[in-house]
Image (cartoon, rainbow, N blue to C red; front, side, top):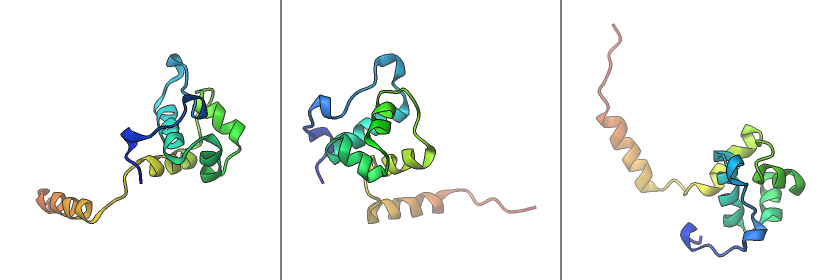
Length: 100
């Protein structure tokens, strides 16, 4: 998988919302678009029509939560064994609260 900072995708293939309409939704969708290689590919992965995805990328509307979470899954790195060990260490270090 290519590193996110090394992605080379033409700007017109993954549109950026105008500044007043940039939200967490537009930012995540834009990054997911770059990572998968374009709007058509992302639309297929999210199982939505491309024109709808363009509206979301442009900030004209917000995607439904399940669709947004699919895009988050695309941009988030895969959970590795090291991540699991870290999560276990954090859980073990939490103070134990005993019921009264």
